[in-house]
Amino acid sequence: MSLASDVVLRAFKAVEERDYEGLVALYHPDVEFHEAPSLPYGGAAVGKQRVAADLGWLETWGPLQPSSAERRMDPRVIADDGQEVVVLYTQRAVDAAGDRFEAPVLGLYEVRDGMLARAQMFHFDTAAILDFLA
Image 1 (tube, one colour):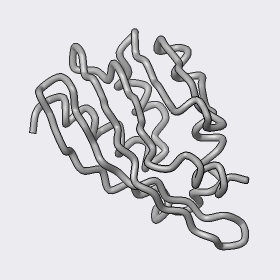
Image 2: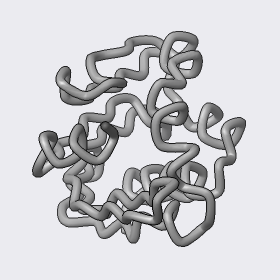
Image 3: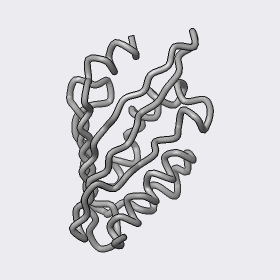
Image 4: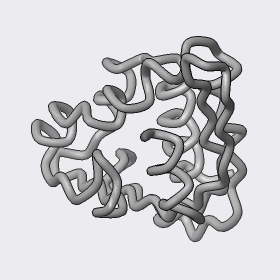
């Protein structure tokens, strides 16, 4: 495993453990996050301060992930060229009625200077996400 994969997997661990400080510490000053624009937290955020302040994802999924079971993403590195890392992971949640959501996501991550510089998530079915969130 390369340094790039290690950085990306540490970011996943920080998200699963809700270690906000640990996650932000991994961000490159020029970090970029890109999500599908159709999602409630979608679009792009650029720069460490902007990305760190953009809590839309956590505000959306946090209440739907009350336990470690829902926060577990099971990230699996698919490709790693030492700078870019592709990870397949699972998005999980449970709503107040007990209905569960589980869907695969493919993420493309760039590591620069030993820090997370870019993240772009590719959801297999954004319509299913929107339906669950409704």
